Amino acid sequence: MTDSNETGTQVKDSMLEEMAQAGLLFGRKKSKTNPKMKDYVFANRNGFEMFDLEKTAAKLEEAKAFLASVAKTGKTILFVGTTPAGQEVMKEVAEGFKAPYVTHRWLGGTLSNFETISSRLRYFIKLKADKESGKLEKYTKKERTKFDKELERLERLFGGLEELTAMPAALIVANTDAHSIAVREANIAGVPVIGITNSSTDPEGVDYLIPANDNSISSVRWIVEQLAQALKTK
Image 1: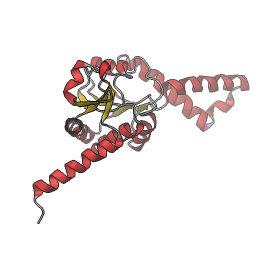
Image 2: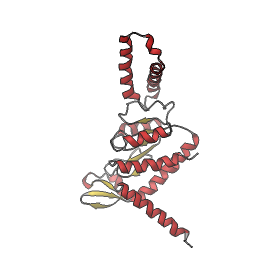
Image 3: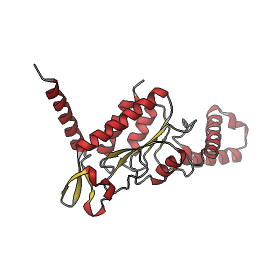
Image 4: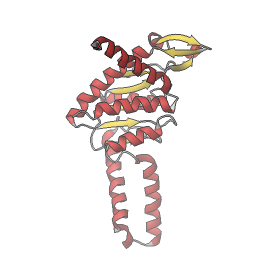
């Protein structure tokens, strides 16, 4: 008969191995380490920091517990990942939950000037719907060309945010250093931030810190898919 503690240890070891294989382990150069991240580093190899994956796993569980509680409320989660490591998985997971996402460029004021942004977003959604329904066909060719150019511009600004109908209950950020403006706006708006944070990054303002490699597609994907599991809780 297998002891429950032994089973728990095996599950934990298996998870840590998965994390290592996905590349979560690797931080940035030691010379760039932020002092506030030192507690999450256990070693240095060839000049690069190595994360303590047990601590990363613990922080991940905290983030998942929070997201599970948000999921029960049915409130909106905003996914943010504009770097190559996060773009694909953020869009994929967000669309799976019919949630808003930003994968190209964070639009300044998205949270700190939410009412104005919401107004422009509603205009974009209506214009897009009018084009799809054929309502713009009554205009001249020159006018339709103008509408098309406007739609292209608005798509660059608001594409992915169509589901952002209210202030989000939380932000999931694939790289908190690259998205410092989004983190700052969330702090101002009182929106909790769950963020993948590398060893060189100042974790200030990140409510649920996940210390890990934010520059690897496999690392970011593994973490975001773990967070997605928590969002399936109803």
